[in-house]
Image (tube, rainbow, N blue to C red; front, side, top):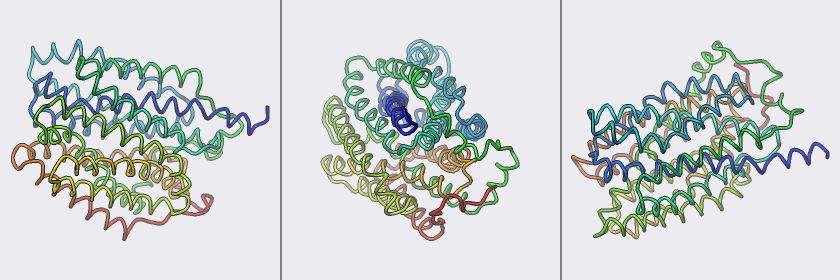
Length: 413
């Protein structure tokens, strides 16, 4: 078997790995808020503390994980630790969260939960994503095509999650545990890379050090990219955290709202999955920078439009725009970092600019949004969020650097 055939054969396991990890992400984030409200009986502010703790712990996990990922390169040690922690999600919520909530202060439980979920999700996502991105460079396939597995996971999690939740709410967490074990098996036995090409991700085997990382903070474009994510991508996440509760206000019965929401997100994920196929080619054509900016403007439109929506049908249409947003940002950011920054620091840039700085904003806005929902309502809160996204995207349009057409011209740290 020649090298090209081997590399092609080393693609198909990665979409399955993407699927199994992002199924955890989708089913937990999609139904955690409902579970906290209906099963744990937490109010908006208490639920907001969990999301805030997830964000603040990311400020520790993400820089650390990014640095270690750049040091480990293609070694899977950190990947395995994260997936084993993910396999404990079901036992945690079934046998730790509820008993702890009954015997101690709700705030303590929220803090512990936020730390744990941050390790698996907010911190873990950059580790999984950067590993597969590097594998895509080595095995010569498009990262976006592997990420289709993540989109399929979102659709399956939405479709299955709503039904699991109506059957037995805690079943969503056990489904996450099973998926984490599947991801562990995929990374352990099936996700292989072409050894002869490994040096393309290691910059001639020169390992990064803290001096390289510190030099990154002197790069203006690093800060502009981080600010963009603090505005556009962070508020996208905060907007979605308690969106399902707002959505329920348009219905007379919670079960009807849950079913419609589940089906809507399933269609959204289907759109996302389909668009992931041509999106790498589209971004290659229009440029990764332009892809990021288009994502920002669509996000602002969706949040502001939701605030002004007269009925649930209008909201469903806007929700489906997320199917366009995610392929844009997921493919664009991976290509943009690879064509703009020193590739030895790929995981560090991704962890810091696309995750760390984003989580600074999520930490601030999650608790603030929870309070605002309770005090001024969802519509007014969404108008403020959408306006912030719009302003930040305009700033990025002016100051974000264009990517290098030739990666060899990217300056080293």
